[in-house]
Length: 384
Ligand SMILES: NC(=O)c1ccc[n+]([C@@H]2O[C@H](COP(=O)([O-])OP(=O)(O)OC[C@H]3O[C@@H](n4cnc5c(N)ncnc54)[C@H](OP(=O)(O)O)[C@@H]3O)[C@@H](O)[C@H]2O)c1
Image 1: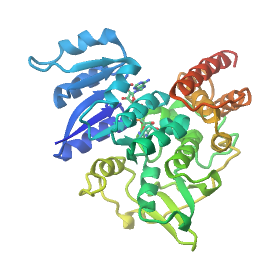
Image 2: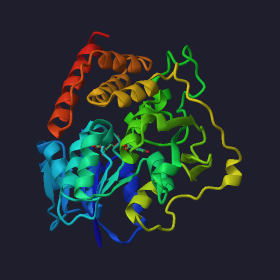
Image 3: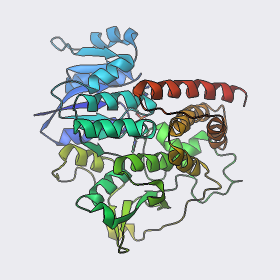
Image 4: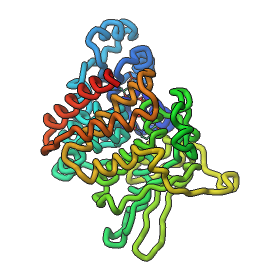
């Protein structure tokens, strides 16, 4: 049996990973984690009996342990150091990082530092710590298998290709629930509208990011670090059906595409099976039922977040950290109905304008800037 650590097991990717594991017989779940969903992790622990569980608050340990049957006594790790410790455990064949947000960086770092192969759903790890994570992975000779469907597609498409033959990476974007809206129509959309993604059922933060197109912006930065292509070689195309998960254009004009159902269990299974393939645990795609595939350009005026991400990625240094931290706080404020949907890119823009960037190349410096910008963004939103 191979040992898996699943960070963020109570989230959308976490639960879908458990669904995949139920259908595979060669994995043992060694560790799981949640932030505050204690009831859910309790149920997961009783079912899968992992040796390690990481949670946010020490005060929840008692209630968690009380619910366990006699003879089951897992080690409980706590707080950000607990999540990192879980990721760095020995005798682990893969760590899947399905934590949402910048909180995923330290676990990604620790997994690689300790030589653990990383299945990466947490795109924010690479957005804010791309240089750090990729250089460490090279130094430690650790594989990072992307679980984000676009990057998983490109990872597959680039396999066996000579770099000099690749002219462009093309990330597809569904366009989100507001695809086709103009600047006026988007002014008064609600939280409920924004959470209602047409193709994917995801956690709330990534659903809002998909609606603003910031998700695609974060993915552009993620692709830059994962595949080492400059930003002018990474394009975004709207493809409302989400059937093509991404494409690679070659210098002779051929465009290669990876197609499949809009089901995250496929890239999750790919990561768990890599470098082999397994019979699909997800529903297969029937192209005759799909009928047609459409493409369009992103509307950068109505959805300025994508351009903000490109600019931040190109500037590098602290800018992607500021972009990500301001976005996380602005999205939270929108979800709590404190700001409007259209305020999200405005808040981020203001934080980027106020940033005077230096080099942020160590874990501590990145986490420091992340904390500072989050606090500053909270203050800015109070005056909004
Ligand atoms: N969902 C998708 O289809 C999808 C697709 C591609 C990529 N991704 C990426 O995968 C990651 C997870 O997305 P998701 O949609 O699964 O998110 P989600 O449903 O919100 O789940 C997030 C998980 O992280 C935990 N968590 C939240 N805040 C944390 C913190 N500060 N420290 C430690 N753990 C924390 C949550 O615990 P609690 O349950 O206790 O809050 C939960 O287990 C994101 O980076 C996202 O961009 C997701």
